[in-house]
Image (tube, rainbow over all chains, first blue to last red; front, top):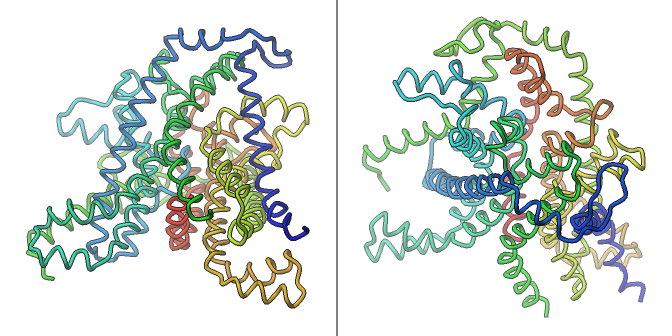
Length: 289
Length: 276
């Protein structure tokens, strides 16, 4: 009997942290979403009003559309770039360790510092990239006033910051493709492209899916990059869901509306993650049954 | 296999572009911090020049809180790392050595909770933290940072403990060691690589995190990224040279650290994402 409770005692600290800090508060947010509440004010039940307020807000829809655009652009951009860089590394580069360190470097950078670095690049008139663009006679980046330019800069910044994650996962997958597969393909006389398309890509597909789902779930939370670059401006044109939630909750002290937004975000995250969780759950049950 | 010349040239060109993309922005900002204020944004930026530390002196004069903020970051990162390592070693051992439907379900819920966006819990935690009078303390940030890494950490520890043969801890149990003693004396030394991998992740995350610090810290527990964000978006015009100096001080130690332990970053990311 004593033996049987041992594993549960061992997992209790990790479960207590997760349930106490994430689980219960999330449920409470679910409750708050149906109430009117603010600082030092008791929540009053108002049913679905917050959800209809959120869904009727044009700022919410702007934030929603921006999030969908940025998240998809970031995830696919990062996958393509990550795959290209990983393939380059897997097929051999000079000074591999040093080169690897450079590609990994942004992993060590705080999102705050990433924004500072990118301000150095894109600061109007004086930034490095702004100067390069103007010396090439190209139109200027007007991210401070133009919604699409701002979303573009945010996307690039985000890809820059998170490329190491995608790169490492794809690179590890690429170097563990069995050599025999390539040898068999060569015997069959495949070209380089055919080899990549019919041998390499299918072998690393599981890793590609994992990288993609993780990045979807995490990119969806994007906050710091937007908050510190444009703060959602001009006139809330570049807001994303997380900054919309923050502004409603902590600036306008509208906890109900913010909570409703939070739960719409949760639903979207679950939708994205469910495919992956389902696969994993099946695999674990299959192994343990 | 010999490559044709054009192919090698193309590969070098691509590699060059990758280096420019990932490395050049960081290098340029570090160099800019060593230039006098008027040359910070010079174009084209010189790579060779006589460095000056005037931005760094101004930084410590105008922002006396900067050094204490970095110290706060260090305390919080070390605290979160210790807490995570202990919690994840215990949990990882349980998931590696025991099997039951309840354990599978709890592992599932652990990953599910990790998928929730962190910002939503700031809403209910904010009043609670205020009520308990623990806002603006190191402890709150330590707890939050650890919580967001315990699920990845537990998976990493499980993967590393899986590689330790079961016979080793069975032998310890026969010698009369309790479960905790077995973990401390047998598992910890043999799964040390996993512990390093977990520590590296939590430490880097905690040193760099912004949202929780922004919401839960104001003065006493203000962190490095938080004061940098104030220097960036204050009411006064940004003093770029000073800001770049601050960013450089915040980045360089963690960058050197990350590169030194990159082997563990790679191992941890691979294990953590493929298995959990």
